[in-house]
Length: 188
Image (cartoon, rainbow, N blue to C red; front, side, top):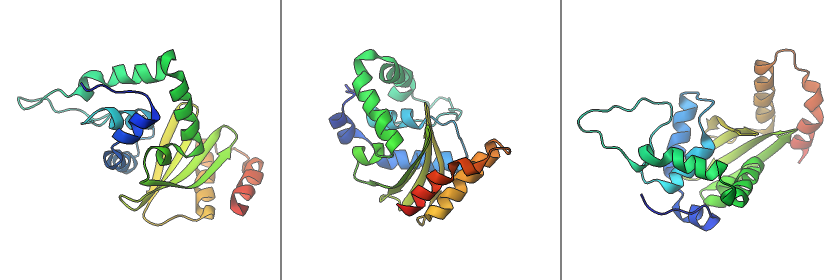
């Protein structure tokens, strides 16, 4: 396995954004809400070949174990649980929440919108590589790829998606408590 570092320079030089976008498309197509997006960013930076989480691996006489198969769990633990790495991990998570992580790693990505509602963050990020707009939701340790679009959705459409997500998760939720956040988002 090649040597790696948890530094911004290393991530900028080694992040394989095309493969990452392909993973995002797979996640959205299959509606996998608990796909580990943060880990996938790590893996598409550190490993040359990355498999799909939550997908059975066909093991036959042609199967060859990759570095990802052998070391992905070790890399995850080293990144997320090692105090030596705390400063970079904190930077990574803060940038993720603000919608600026992908734009910090590669110029392929552009942050279009970021909306913070309490402890939840919603980001619309454009990928020049495949001309798609990716809609993410982030809170605590969860980083979810919710949807992708070939055309930029309006702010009204983004708010509509967020309201639907809230209503789907709790039909009794009072959406009026978020109106100030929605109005600020619409007017900025």
